[in-house]
Image (tube, rainbow, N blue to C red; front, side, top):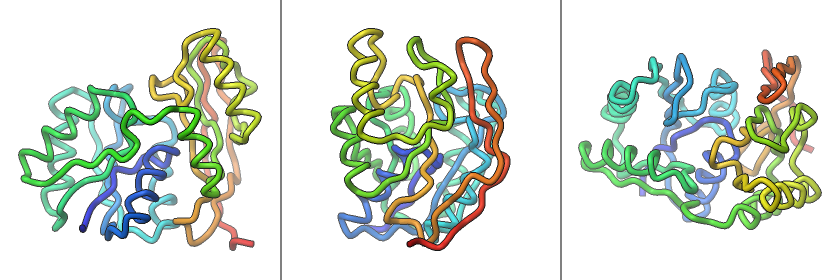
Length: 223
């Protein structure tokens, strides 16, 4: 099976690619649609870093940009995929019907398959699997009650996962952040040839929502 992966640089898209590789599939390209404004379809925070992530994964990157208008978003994705010789597309959708069904619509128009290997997985189990697989994940945006500025730049570990489970119980957030409660950046995983390191970043917090804007990444050899 030859596939492209929809890549944001966050944990779900990278882990979906990891699973596809575990299945023995050939990942030929990474694809990203970069919104110029807030999008319900695509990630926005630190989306400029996808080139670094794709390079570390050894994948050519096919990039498009969009003003985040609903139909334009789909047209740009279709344009990105139309020139690729692939059997299907892998995405990191976990619980968003909006995202999953719209990707499926594009794939149907191109006569290729849509694969969502994380679909409806339990959030706690999903995070634990990522950590067990050797993923180094940092939080780069928060937008939910219970997640304050102290989470920005925090590396997800077992303790953080249990805190997120507790916040789910108190506030109802999705443990894996599928509702946009938080966004992440994968600094290392088995797919990377070199580890990514945040060279310069800036915390931006408005009292209820915040981002860790990463200006620059460097790479380091793996231990």
